[in-house]
Image (cartoon, rainbow, N blue to C red; front, side, top):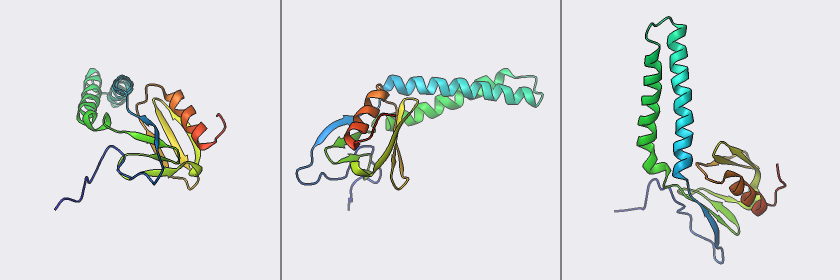
Length: 150
C-alpha cells in the first residue's frame, strides 16, 4: 500500500487547470559548497574561541572540531538539499512536497546569503536555498507577486 512520498524535495502539489510552470528554481552546488565553507570558518573560529575562553591549552582542536562538524553535516545533507526544487507558476509558488503559496499572498521577498526568503501576508516563511543568482530569483518573484523592489 503506497500513498506517495512522505517527504519529497520537489513540488507534489498538482497544477490547477490551465496553470503552467513559468520557471523552476534549483539549488546550485557551488553556492552550497560556498555557504558551507563560510559555515565551517565560523564554526572553527567559535570552537577555538570557546576553548581559549575556558583555558584549554589545545585551542587548535576547536578548529578541527568545527571543520569536522560542518563537513559531516554538509556531506550528509547534500544529496537531499541539492534535489530541492521550487516552481513558479503563473498563479503560485510551489515548493518541496505540498508547499504552495498564491502569488497574491506574498508580502515580502528578501535575500539571505545565497537563499531567498518568501514571507506571506499571514507570516509564513519559505526559504529557497543555495541559489546561484539570488538577485535574479528575488527579482523574478517580486515581479510575479507584483511587489516593488527592496
